[in-house]
Image 1: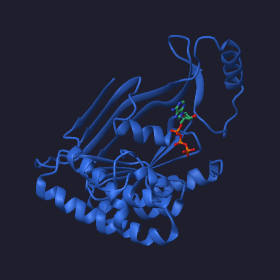
Image 2 (image 1 turned 60 degrees about the horizontal axis):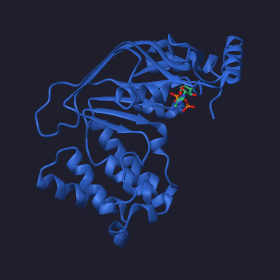
Image 3 (image 1 turned 90 degrees about the horizontal axis):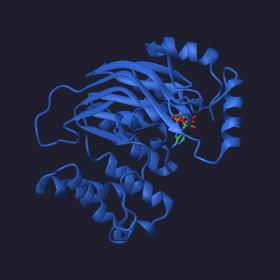
Image 4 (image 1 turned 90 degrees about the vertical axis):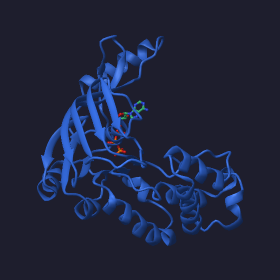
Length: 275
Ligand SMILES: Nc1ncnc2c1ncn2[C@@H]1O[C@H](COP(=O)(O)OP(=O)(O)OP(=O)(O)O)[C@@H](O)[C@H]1O
């Protein structure tokens, strides 16, 4: 296992072309703990009767005889600068797990992941936010995290303040915000920093209707600025608009990898409708 992020958020240095190399990657989530023998028996017996087309990853035993969800199995692909990859698959196919491994959030149990270039992971709008800090303090925190200069910090603060339009609430702790206000701040922050590699979950695009148009044009700027994008989505229109290539996952494995139209057609013919 080896996760290497070259220059993660290293915005100060000039960077080489972005890339993603994933070789024979596997990821497990342990489910069984110590005493729950009957749960172990039930899970393994149900997993052996699993029928094609059901949701979730494959349930099995790892080398230490723990019951695990095999969320990703033997995933191999390469992306170079200019590629926009969409990941499709049924609920529980492993799409979000793959994004999180690429973003260095989950550690694979086997295989290699090399990501070259600055990364921004847009998973949910709360990601990386400290609810006890004020909106303004969260902006400063993010700026420091990505290593911005003083001038960069000022620009970040002005940009997010104007976008989020929280007025005096920017001086209050985020925990007193409404959910829509948290989305405004989180979205403004996440899209203020243009990465070379953009990892994005489609849920990130959800927001309240009035805010969505404003958010969409901002998101489009970040997407167009990124050299590589990886997007998980259930929405054919989103995938067709934004992606150049699709990987179709089924119970943690790649079943197809290729041009958007071709994979969409095969997926639509075979897939369990997602929620
Ligand atoms: N933290 C976790 N602990 C245990 N199992 C998990 C965890 N996260 C995900 N899983 C399991 O891993 C498998 C893959 O989940 P993942 O969230 O990657 O699927 P997904 O394709 O993104 O699904 P959806 O389209 O429903 O969001 C599922 O079977 C899920 O139950």
